[in-house]
Image 1 (cartoon, rainbow, N blue to C red):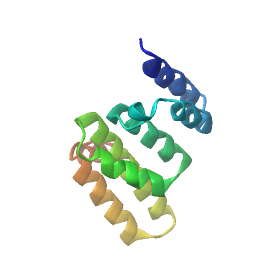
Image 2: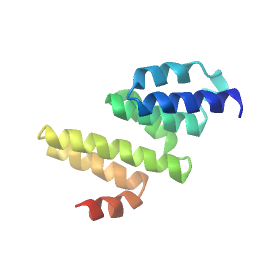
Image 3: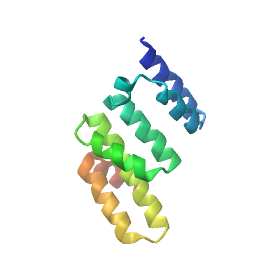
Length: 117
């Protein structure tokens, strides 16, 4: 396991403990060329979702839209989480827009959510 994988493994442990800022700081210690790799961006987006950091999350989500299926699932979960938050704040039109973005990122989320309903 190289040092980047070890850092992601440690950051994952922090996330499991709810220590999201610590996980972010650990990821920041990666070499610059590793910080822009899809798995690292995917991990960052998960942290930002947990921290409700929508603006930076939006930027990363846009980068990941052209990545693989796993990353697009993460983008869909990010937009879905935003949609739920907006709905709870009675911002229904914005919530619907975020839900559409979730489905555009990964159509499979539509089926997954239908099962939960």
